Length: 143
Image 1 (cartoon, rainbow, N blue to C red):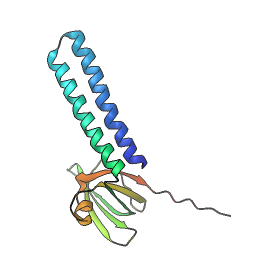
Image 2: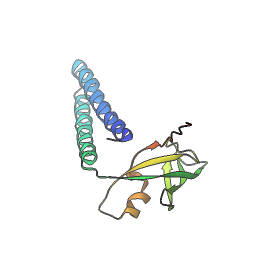
Image 3: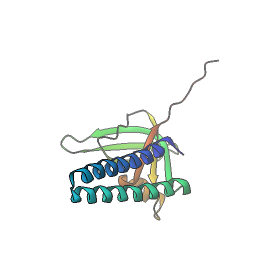
Image 4: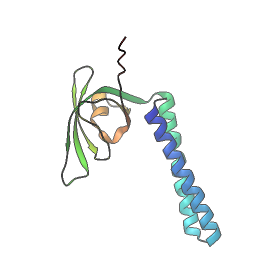
């Protein structure tokens, strides 16, 4: 299991569990039924999201795109940035990602996208299907 996908899986499970635990304990001790119900609802939704992501990872329902970040253009007043990514096959892709995704120019990455029933082009061009990314660090042996 790739590290970025495992990290996302752990984050979803942790957030859901802590919301369920914290909200339930506080809701029960204070007698707040609304908080208790919301905590249970968030916990259930997180569990469903966790199970769907786990199924996608185990069945290999994700697409891996390896290559180099060629250009990064952060938008000045928007919460997004334009990324130009060149795959190992030499094809260029243009993405719009959130600014929180830090891809550096000239660095090699593996991008993980959720698969759809659409073609590879549609999978890769839609940024909301991004599951995670990791930098590829090449080790050079000087022997």
